[in-house]
Length: 170
Length: 443
Image (cartoon, rainbow over all chains, first blue to last red; front, top):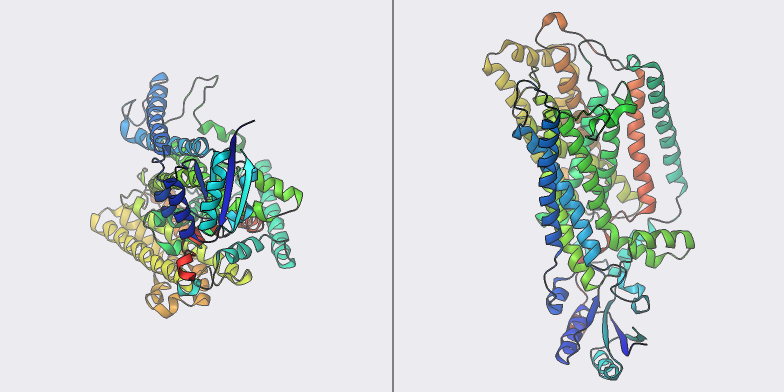
């Protein structure tokens, strides 16, 4: 049984949510998760998370696409060399189109993979710590802390006007 | 924006998710005839497979007819969806917010429709997979120097990427629907589709980056796809096809016709579902300005083609263009000019751009004009090539007309299903443009 405890504060206002995060961070609670009905740069700034690594998936996928494009066209053309319209067997200008399309295709598929892997879609918060109003008009701050810290967290949440507080084991 | 100030976050959820309520009589009244025409299209196709391509109107020298016209038309329709969802996203044009989901859905369904036509056009459609490079017992590979193989790669990439872009953009909204519905089958389906989305800062962080990269990929992709489609023609040396302006000319035409289709679809949807607060007149004003731009570009291209044909001194080239304006098919040429260049001229006036009835009627003419543009390029060029002894006339058969009508029904069928199953306006992005609720403002 874990000694960690999850505490969730629910807010109606974005500025109160941001202020709560600042106060919690100042008090040394760094294991935080913020829920919002839309993406917000302000939340991103206050959470100060490292830059998303999806971009490396995208770059990797795109480079793999280039390699596959070159490999496909060059190897297949040389495997069964047929001269078409007296053009060279390995003729880069038409092959560039295939290479370009495969770059985009594999880059896009890798981006999807990057999103699925990194956002930990199913694992980033326990079901009991989610409120369906987060997809409507409420903001949430979830804190994972030791059982001793719960009281301090509650105090901060209350001082910032949390409308509801839920406590659950994590 | 002032029109959107009456909206609240909760109302956005209510209004958009209410669109997914049980289908009404009107919906069925539209859906059932649509199914009938899809069935008729399918019957025509089966008849053609059974009887051979002879039942299509193909005859020497025209072996690319209505099917290839339909293919180019539907690929073109798809393009403005990506323009609105990806290119305008990169330019941060807020007027796209309320219409981009509908435009994206249109893209996916239009590519699905377009992809059928090269297969329908084949004499042995069951061998369509021969166009893909795969190891086979004959040890043959596809010819990568052929524009038709470029097409296979371009269109299948476009379908995959636009479908993924469509789906990813919808994940937070599907989660919002999941949180609202209560009855078991729908709840389970939306839960699976939402991939467990909870709207945490981690999810948004990676999601917004992934979305940006998708938009950045979709932008050059959309330009490449219609360029490749145009090269199906421009790579041959037939008069009327062999011209260097085809790629930008096709891309502009695609965006023009696609915007026409977005207007044609959104005007009735806005009225039926009471989305006046979401799809505002400013949105239509923005789209109408893009119509003026693209109409200007294709009008210029029509003129440039003509000038080059005349100035080149090439008798076959000039003969082709002279035939277009005076020959047996001249009526279609002039329909194209009137619909695409003359009818959009009043859009220069703001009062016209904000009049939805006029815009709706205009968008119908634009789509008719753009269909005939493709018909003119394909059929007139083929019927009047280099050799006068090989000139001929092509008339579409009832089978081709039936399949074309079926394709419109097929597109509409997917679109009607989409309206009743998935959120047609982006809930999360609409909230981005609403004023953020702040405690400060309340005290």
